Length: 235
View 1 (cartoon, one colour):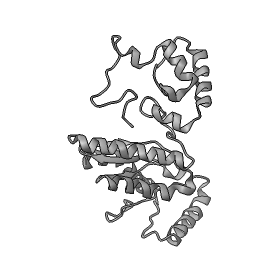
View 2: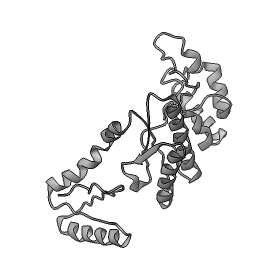
View 3: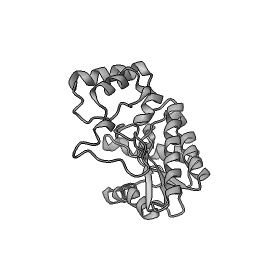
């Protein structure tokens, strides 16, 4: 069987590609390195069926989190690969400090993390704690020289942190570029670039043209969820 053992708390899925004659030597070398780094077990898929079983665990992870808890937040931060182990240790520590559990899946080998912080969706205190942990994880990514999104984008949720990641002058340039294509702020208003004083020139331009928050009263604009601040609390 190529499925991970049940006792395993951490697994690393490595896929190699290339001419067929090169794959077996690569796989053996990877297994050797894994043993040298104290891996308790390694398994090499021998055919397509065994390979599919290994990938099944990865593809089922998201649903497994949904069965483990009624609510979870997901992040998309990035850290340098040299700080990957340290960052993952902090993810679990930050959650444990708030009495929560966390896990991480999906392509961490490129430094792009997807930590899941689990909580009881019916418990407002746990929900608030999970959001606090999530923000702490993303700020850790910034502190480590990484960024707040590796592939899924900033959108609305991470807007406040853009001012922590970029200087006010940088955000102002981004805002001017955006205004060149959308001077009336009609395309996805209120996304990516933060509002308020943290955006410098961009914030002033937004105020002049009308912010996303000011537009909420128009038909079709969504109201913020209960307990949300102006920027939105969701990760």
